[in-house]
Image 1 (cartoon, rainbow, N blue to C red):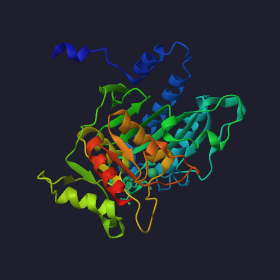
Image 2: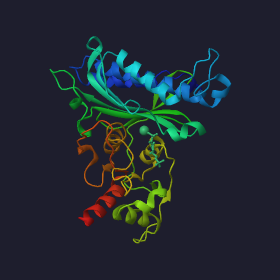
Image 3: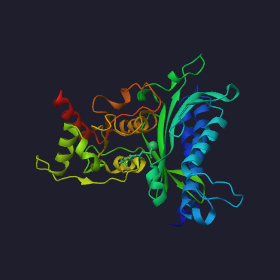
Length: 336
Ligand code: AHM
Ligand code: MG
């Protein structure tokens, strides 16, 4: 269509967030500014990820450059990019990153009212073979009128104001919820802008796919074992589910969100709390799932009700289509 070539009415993520802001007349635009800094971080990491395959040629990650300095690994680089972008926004007080043992407390002159928890580059085992990886983030508001403390981030996931992820895959896709639904944006590399391509994402009520590392099956508990067995050998006359597992949470959750189904990283005998981290993996993805009409469960409770005690704490997670998560909830309830 000729007219399409000249479309300038595209909904960019900047325009989208500013539109949302006008719904809150009291807003002074702080959230929009914070988000624009996160978006900048995502664009930067996207560029670095896209060049990663040329590392040897260009002297990137892990190689020594012409000055003889060691080049930074992609995950280290991504962490630095996001820390810088978030501090320079002037809108944050506390940052928790998967890459850093301790939380970062922003110096008073640059402080703002938000706390950001994030995994700058998740799916590290997939970096060197060019498979999709991503950034995951969640945003809390600091409690008013006191010095920021770790308690500001050790809050249940339901207190998050916003959550999202950016997937560096066949295209660069940013999925965001500010608590009123979920929207997906795709980076147009020629414009350098994220364009709204997936408005108001709703996860199918029931799916045909399950996603889990079955190599851990020997150590699973009863309900997880029964559930996965029922995916393969259903007894209610339905067709078996397909298995899809990338081993990159952002990619596995993104597919689950769009196609429906269930993603699980259960606890097992070796790791009773599973592998995934509560603050910056389990919470943001659970927030998005609920906002899209799905569910997220830890095997004991609604994931977003969990109150973390440590910033790098782990929890088992079952998330996805409403009906599929309901089944696993029933299996755990029957155990008690
Ligand atoms: P990472 O933070 O070291 O990258 O680990 C997290 C990743 C997730 O993206 C993914 O869901 C999971 O680890 C896969 O784990 P496993 O290899 O045990 O299946
Ligand atoms: Mg991770």
